[in-house]
Image 1 (tube, rainbow, N blue to C red):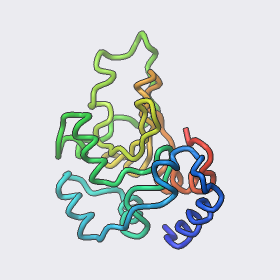
Image 2: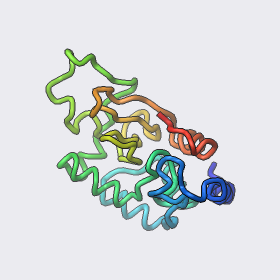
Image 3: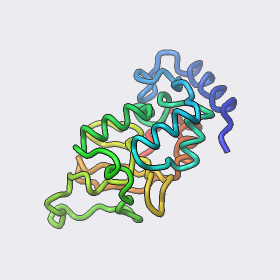
Image 4: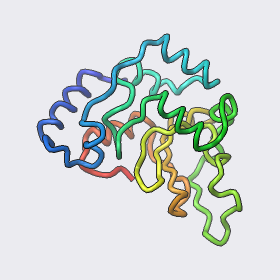
Length: 184
């Protein structure tokens, strides 16, 4: 599925196109990915958080890279993502990721119908933060439930709900083809 050589060649091409790092997020990730993880490292992370990562993401970590160049401000490495989620949700494993993601369709109740706990973590359980969009909005990877492997946009901070994007492979490759555009 993943062609690491193609991705790294494309990132090198993007670095040549954007030497001053003007594309959104490039000041943070410099159009570079973090080092790949070993299968052992990924398995240790999965054991720590109590869930098996979706195959596409797992393979990305072991064959392509961990954190760095990606949509918005770039991908968090998995340890940083875990720390951010634990701080934000005040929940730890296994609840945080092992509980199924509660949505199968985009969810954006009208302002007057929003539940009192609209901002609470129960609406994002079963997902791992992937990237910061900015202004309190995040891209999240579903890791538990029937739609594991999909990326969702959490924009509850602007009362815009939680919206389905693409599966992880399509989401990343779409950005790689058009790094100068926002994905959402």
